[in-house]
Length: 78
Image (cartoon, rainbow, N blue to C red):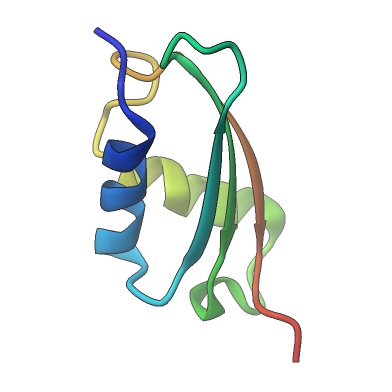
């Protein structure tokens, strides 16, 4: 079962309430998304750790309802 972009955004915002999020459906199938997440919570963290935190926020949906998620993450620019 595919996942809506709004559901992905909801999970991420639950974990990172200050996040600015952009989600694009890459294939129009609700299964392949590109997602940009910018939050102060990422400041000082490695890119790998930032991605891990986003995947954790999806509460196990990655690889199930959500097949592919290309991530871009960062802290806000000062």
